[in-house]
Image (tube, rainbow, N blue to C red; front, top):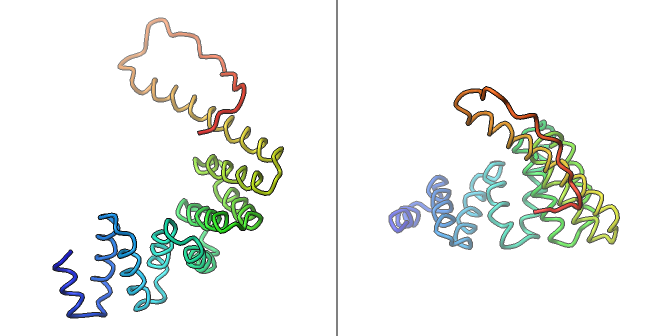
Length: 193
């Protein structure tokens, strides 16, 4: 880190050195310094959407309002980028920042957009949970409960199926007298993580 800082002092506008220093300081747990170097790098390469998203993620734990501005810019620039996991996570993160800034109605709308992007993926479970949190914050406890129930039932079913698949993969050979298939589990009261 010290060697890179001396290189950075000698050549103040070296984008690569600034980015590497930001990443190193993040790894060392020095978030403020990581943000400072990322901001300086973004000032050099203003059109770098990946750098802006990186800065937004750095700021997420430090300053929700600043992070929100960066997430919103990234979302606007990536508007037509399909349904990839990266897009789902970015939209979800932007909604989280709105939630943390007290903009629960706006966060709800963005979480719903994220849910459409994440349909039938593992990301739909935490997004449904986040939607339930928004409903709670907006005072709609019945809707919050419904979202949690759907999320927990779906998550439990997926975990049961994955457990069965994992057990099948670990068997060295078929058993001569296979057990009957397990009966569907009763979900009962929802239990969320």
